[in-house]
Amino acid sequence: MTGNEIDSIDPTDEVLPPRSLVLFGLQHVLVMAASPITAVFLVSKALGFSDALTVSLISATFLICGLGTILQSFGPAGFGARLPFIMVPGGAPIAIFLVIAQQTDVQTAVGAVILTAGFYFLALPVFRRLLRYFPPIVVGTMLLLVSVNLVRIYGGTITGKPGSEGFADPMNVGLALATIALTVIFARVFTGTLQRISVMLGLIAGSAIAIGAGYMDLSGIFDGPVIAVPQLLPFGMPKFDFFAALPLIVFSIISMAEATGQTIATAEIVGHRGDAHAIVPATIRGDAVASLVGGLFGTSLIITSGENVGIVRATNVKSRYVTATAGVLLVLIALFAPIGRLANALPGPVVGGTAVIVFSIIGVIGIDLLRRVDLREHGPMFTLAAALSMGLLPILVPGVYSQFPQWSQMILANGLAAGTITAVIVNAIFQHLPLEQFQEKCAAVFRPE
Figure 1 (cartoon, rainbow, N blue to C red):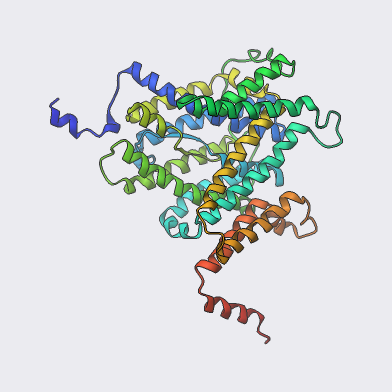
Figure 2 (figure 1 turned 90 degrees about the vertical axis):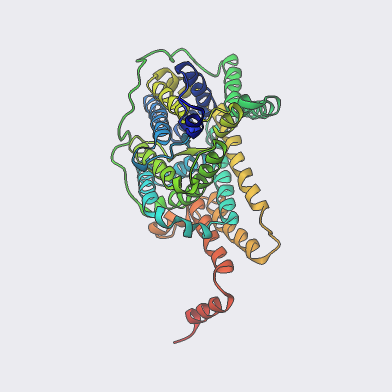
């Protein structure tokens, strides 16, 4: 092969020796492995799933992440970007999935995932026009509400139910605080890959303390089958409720915007030849397929992640065959049942401590977005105030809408839905509806016949 032929090869198409593929692929897996495990055990602990179901869901999540990663790496028939992407369960989608499951039931939450996956395909041709209604003030508010709601929920994982025996046991609270503190210490002390997995290291360290204190039993991890086979429709037939699915559908628009940015940024980092904007739809279609299949196996949205971009930049290994190899490794992990049983053995306080800091980080991201907005202006100020009013009220005062019709509770009693929809509407009134036109509409509504 001549020098000109080598130069003409897209860096993402370079095929490395098998040993290098495995080593570099394993590095990607180590960075993202915390996401599937954390996602499943947080949901399983909150919803009280059985051990067998938890193991099946962990297996399913790793499987879909692996298959989705392979899809994004190879991009057959326009499904996947043909870039070195890794797919993971998104943090905010997991939070929304959990809220829907607690407000309705898990079958409705799974139905919401499938509806949202379908919405990706419907919205793809027009999503750029929808983005104008989701500026930082809206997205930041949504992430902040996600954070507050989930910290409230997982605080109960730490303390137990009020009035129950052992409520707010100092040992349980201490385990949670130790997990949080160790996570912060690891994030400060380590750099590079270890810093990226500081949440997982904090979880491991908290678990080690729990083992030493006799709060965690590892005896059953290798009991039972070694091979795990994910279960199709583990909760039975999904239930489809558009109003319940609305928060996840709203998030999908934000997810498409994130996928756009990640595709363009990654294409630039790897030196992809061609128009990066042209492959954005392929990235989103890959996300939609992975989420649809994931919903059939009981997972939340599986989306393209930017977590592995730092590895690509640090190693300068740009080949999509490396991430495809990582996808194969994830599929193999999915079939190893002891990993699921290990995650299920984690103590509630350690899980709660990890959850609190993970979802607080989501809140920090929301605050960072809000920081970019001039909240001294009337429009942003009242948008945020109105959204927090509608969003925090049902979170902090459960049952406030219990006497309202059932159909309205689907939105009003869901702080994420109520707050986000309020932010979209109020922001649109201030930013996209001229004052004179708004005054005319108000006059028409209140004008006596």
